Length: 115
Image (cartoon, one colour):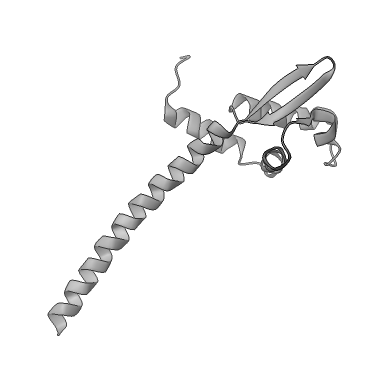
């Protein structure tokens, strides 16, 4: 039960980013680098506890890591997991490119036959 395959990880990542607040948090972390939890929470109209719960979901999915320096908790984006989603989208694009190429060839053959 403890073993995860790549598809399980991808599903967990996609579930984590299905929430707009979590996407916003992740975007801020990618753009600005490691940020204190309290500074992240100041951006939202919700409690520190609510923001912390969103961060925990992102942590569980491996999208962010937490570093504790004394009482300060720094949250940092984990780009390897983000790359996993990009790789999946590239595969999808590749499949559609192949299909569109096939369709283009079929249409060209049809046009050639009509001439």
